[in-house]
Length: 190
Image (tube, rainbow, N blue to C red):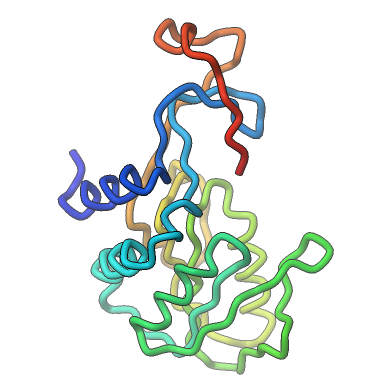
């Protein structure tokens, strides 16, 4: 059973078409009845503000000096988190398909850092961000995400605080459940 906070977050995701229901071809080639595209909600800054307010409610005891967001998906939500916390905001850029601290941004030793991400599944980008933060001598206080799709399979060696957990079954295209067989599949992209 979902909490009131989780129900509200789901409503926001559905209203903004960040959470879609149908027959989707995933990047892996597998099929799903649901597709989540967090970028859709970022078009509506009032919705982003509300989602971050809800997430902060789950992370009330966190104190940080700097919010760090990996590009590209977390830019808007990271900025909103920093605004609400009154913290400095830094984003990580891709350079040769790896995250990097660029554009003159820096982190100082002992600064308390909160990493903000939109969605985690395997946690690769967050792990890259953690390596960057650790390399500066800063103190990672936690990782916060809007949606945790990891099924509890990742450990960031820091608290992971999510607004909501979403785990949808995926299917081999040659072994679809009957309710998906009659729906033409679409490939929405990520």
